[in-house]
Length: 385
Image: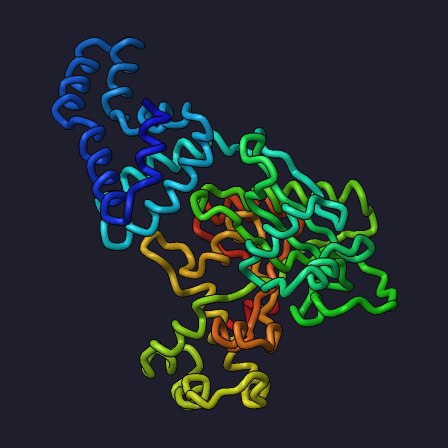
């Protein structure tokens, strides 16, 4: 039956897929009446059996359906692809979020890092995998094989990816690392052709982390990947003492362009409230001198965006910031003109962020962020907040 369902689903158009998701979401949802009965039964008979029955009633049948679909040939890749379709419907069909949560709950177990295989990607890696990496790179586009080769050079670069035994030759997530003197400050410098300079590297700068499978979004593989790679680098290269990132700040430009003047004034001062209006103009060009001239106020604005602008749960609105803070990093620096490209300016006027992973503080920072919503900052950032 699982095989038949997967075969039929592959013939569906968009409307049929939506109908399919709605049907299984409703048909296999927990029954509230049944849950109430099991609660009453448990309160009268507080034993392991009644507790198990209550748990089964609360879960409903959606997760069991997904487990059974996973038994079909190629069931796991089918479900990853199916969730990719489901995610596209969620913004408008919010009632399907419960179905998505059930699938994501199972994926967190099935794609537990204990089941995953970490591989160092080199120029000798299978061509099929290298081609997929070029396709999946989402942070800093890889133009061609020559561009990829630069990122794979072994003396000052490392490239790691997670694989699942069921999804052979299909990377799930990968990270690109450059060895630098101090945390990297320019993405163009990090990916430019190699020079013969010996800079006595002491830092591993993570400059790109890309999720390859949209169907696995929010399954938090990246958290484990960074920590695992830090361990691997420590084992291989004891001279690398420091770890940090040069990370994008996507959404910053859009946020500022929609920020009311009175809010801007609160952040950078009433007398300066119009001094950054040039960032909203259509004639702003890459490398505009006014960005450097107004560095102090832009730093204040960026620090406010990262630290003070919160989502409904009280965490930063920027998803990259949330990711690194939850991982145990601290916000180390705001870097002007770190990405002088069209994409970089569209995202954040070319501004990027350094997050620092100080190994002795990772667990403490993680606990403070998760339990107290505390955002750990360097002194460089504190002066702008």
